[in-house]
Amino acid sequence: MTWTRMLFSYAILMLGVAMCVFPFLYMLSLSLQSDADIFSGVPTLIPETLQFSNYIDIWQKAPFARFTLNSIIIAGGITALHLIFDPLVGYVFAKMDFPGKRFMFVAVLSTLMIPFFIRMIPLYILTARMGWLNTYQGLIVPFAMSAYGIFLMRQFIRPIPNDLLDAARIDGCSELGIYWRIVLPQVRPALATLALLTFIFQWNEFLWPLVAVSTTEMRPITTGLTLFNQEFFTQWNMTAAGGVILFVPSLLLFLFTQRYFVRSVMLAGIK
Amino acid sequence: MAADGSMGAAASTGIGSGARSFFRTRRLSRRVQQTLIAYSLLSPAIIYFTVYFFYPIGLEFWASLFSGQPLIGESRFAGFDNYVTALQDARVRQSVFATLTYAIGVTAASIAIGLGLALLLNQRLPGRTAIRAVIFFPYIISFVIVALIWQAILDPYTGILNGVLANFGMPTQNWLNDSSAALPVIIAITVWKDVGYAMLIYLAALQSIPSDFYEAAAIDGAGPAQQFRYVTWPLLTPTTLFIAVVSMIGQLQEIAPAYLITNGGPADATRLFSLHVFEAAFFELNIGYASALSFLMFLLILGITFVQFRLLNRDVSY
Image 1 (cartoon, rainbow over the protein chains, first blue to last red):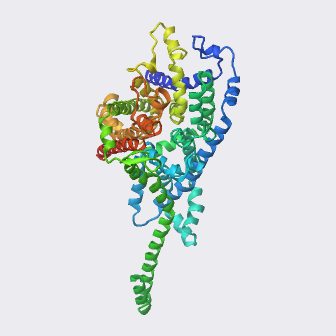
Image 2 (tube, rainbow over the protein chains, first blue to last red; image 1 turned 135 degrees about the vertical axis):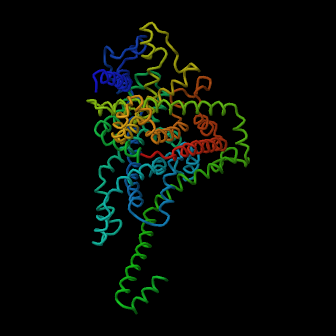
């Protein structure tokens, strides 16, 4: 590669990197500014004094501890259900043979074309009639599995050699035993990826909690922050501090696992 | 029945055919057994997808035939009145137009910028893994955060963008309160968030193109531009369509930027269809009417997906 081409490539890519990083730095900066800094009329990236008390203020004005706990329960519960069901169903489609398999698989994949928003109103009716509005189960069970997760697990389970499974069968291992003792240990990295993707996307979810939650104590951190912004905070420093609290777990998870993350998105995308 | 019969016959004939039909019986019963096991393992999934995906579509259509709050409150059968009202509502038409502009804008820009970034990152550059991760990162961040960051940046009085523009003596803008700027601005914010996804999918596709193709093209005297035009781009067709389908399905139903950043304003310029449906359902409590709107969106998404899949099925063979 020529030097000019390399320089040109780096120049554009660095512009992209700067555009991705700068807004987050600005949020961090805002979260540490005083009201006076914000209204000085001269927007700054590096405030003269760092006002860490914003974080204490926001914690006192809104029950952020409870919001965080709710987010962990909801996203954690959904992730646990995905880890139970997605690989099991993926295994059935990858390794078992039965009449109607193709139809069932296409039916599962077709749900990818029914986005959440389309189902939101009937889900609300359904959940209301079950008496599950404003409950954890009402926030968790509707997201217990996903066609995406099932497809991802099927892709990882398929390459496991059939001979290995047959050998276990001859040794008298049951189908569930094969799944539990042979298949699952083989796909442990894929399970970690599935858990990560599911947790992060559920951690971010705001629409269903907005619809299905009616009390402050049941709000996850996303709608907690949104609604408190609308009710209490008019200043960007407070809002930004709340944003940083919501942001840090995603950043940490991503920093430690970005390789798996990137690879799994690439794998699921190209089949 | 057949299995029992062959077993009986096998018992009365020689060992050789007995063993043969024994194995056939074993295989048959194992197949039945495996079918039973498969369906019992699948049963939670069958129940889940029926209750939470297929049944709701039917329920939504049923609810759309009522006015008021069908199944959970007072309602009255209204036939197709909701649909007639929806199609005659100028605000609905305006929001459909805004939504199509938004979805097509985001999709086209993500494809163009995502492909550009992927082409740059497909070279042997030191540090490219890190660059790839940084550009992908906004994709996994909650729209709640994205919304508040960009609102702060674009704030007409205290935001840093106008601050910088003023510093360089350029005219400042009231970005989110200008009815001609607001929609392009939320398109740009969504592209900022989502472009990393398109970039990754393109990168994966680029890495799977055999290098022989480029060597052959180079021998034939094709320069970089011609190689892209005649080798890369045609081979990327399935990938481009895949990204287009995923992006269109996602963006046609997206509510986050309208709800979190602009609240549909100014003057309905960013009133996406999803926001219109949301408000009809949960602010005006007009569940029946909102169901009709939502069902219409389902048909629209189905139609667009169908057309895109027809295009997708035109095979590209290596």
